[in-house]
Length: 105
Image (cartoon, rainbow, N blue to C red; front, top):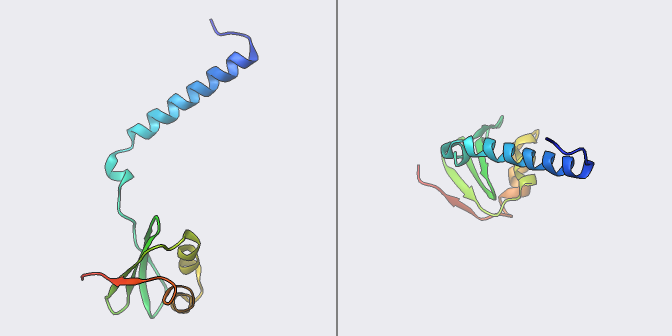
């Protein structure tokens, strides 16, 4: 029998919500949880694509070269993918502000 006390009902409701959320999260395969970031194609004559994971951004240039930039906050990544000119945004906000390391092809 379920209590009619509102406080007990609220606590029971919260406990059930927590159990459901935990069960759902545990059903997500580990492969999906740790999937690599998907590159976003950019409309640019200079930049081809960008991917972002936590604070690391990987930019692929139209030349085929790829560079990794560490310590990049999410707002810079979002600014790049939303920029009218991703190449200009890159030169103004990324190139001289974050250390780029060329990746193997």
